[in-house]
Image 1: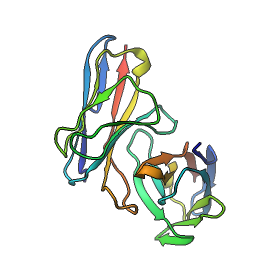
Image 2 (image 1 turned 60 degrees about the vertical axis):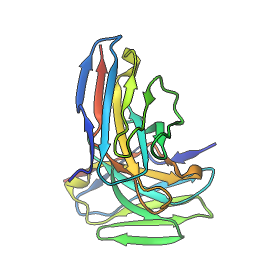
Image 3 (image 1 turned 120 degrees about the horizontal axis):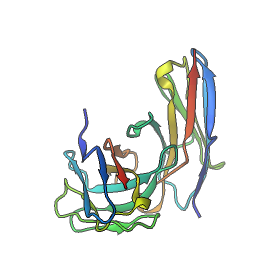
Length: 109
Length: 114
């Protein structure tokens, strides 16, 4: 079967650093994607990992370990506008995406 | 700036009506998808297409149908709407065969069946 796990909710303070974890078990692996989704809006693409290691993009970084079926999204210098759901998605066999349940992040002043 | 468009954004309609949710993209993507998402819940794939005249059912059983007569257009139809169809429907597209390319999502249609 296919399964992606993420924490349901996280809370952090403005200016802090937060790490959102994702573990996955999927049939086939063709990359892991992180999306941001504000309430009532469409998901928007944040990052992509297919090889082990860290990918950095400004305040956002994403890490992948294929042997452990594990990824994390790291958000630095948190801002109030970062309050959103963060979706982990794996591109598996057949090139379809399997989405995790999302982690709802609340950034407090 | 959106390159994938969904209409309507919101629809409130009575039980038994036939509904078509529209989705169009201007990026020339071959692959298109429909997802269903309840508030605060995960996305569930209900239909996808590899290109013109290709339609496949997704992981979540759905009473809806889709068609793909043109590359840019992927409408979803409910023949007889029921309250259980109340949800948000998201359309997405991606390049075929490029593993590092993400999906691009439309703004969604929030559907309420009375």
